[in-house]
Image (cartoon, rainbow, N blue to C red; front, side, top):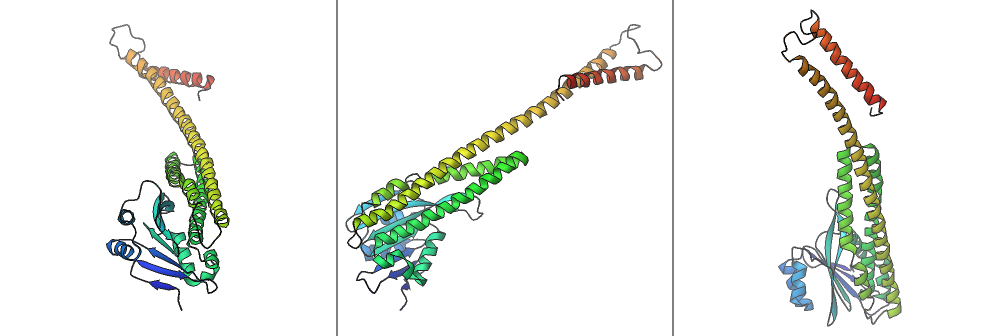
Length: 323
């Protein structure tokens, strides 16, 4: 008999049932929650209306939430996902309703690691730790573990992007370098906003009571998740410092290039200003007072004089090591 049931278009259910245990777990995953899905939860579980409205809201909550109610815990967490172009990190919100014998997940968008674990439950439920204990608290641990592991994978991609940006800053196009650094800073800011409160929320989950699994064992599992959040935050701090150094290097290189451009433009300006001064002097109409003007080859003499001045200016720039 299959442990999977499709209740409606957006509601799917997996029953985790170990024959050696007496308590099964209903994992219900709801995508694109709307009025019909919220009504289903209200009728079958009696959750608070304010929490159900938060689950169906189109906009994401601005912060993580954990509420302990009579018979269940309501939880909102945010996790990073890549946009369709695989270049920018954005936040995806997942709501959890967890109680004795059930766990309900409501992602605001498709979350790859969550879908992978749900599909694994449909195909090979025996491989889950929650199958051994038949505890919804252990199932929540496995889901969070999967989501945090995916966050590590995104951080690895970010590290690779930082290495590529470093090479581009040193040898590549300034516009491309600026775009890469801007993208990295955007991803780090989003990732820090998403992950900054996970540790505190998971610490509060460590206080959950279970009639199936000993509290010390449950505390050990969630303690691992706290360790993961610390490692993620430390990695984010290191990446932030690397990107700031990269940004400073980019600014230094840009300032150096700009200085070179300004130096060349200044030398051109000084040189041609000197030539323009000579031309202006010889354009003065002074009768019998302007040398070379009335000579047969006066034009070429003046032009040669201007060339000598130009060569002198170049010699001066070279001697000063400005060229």
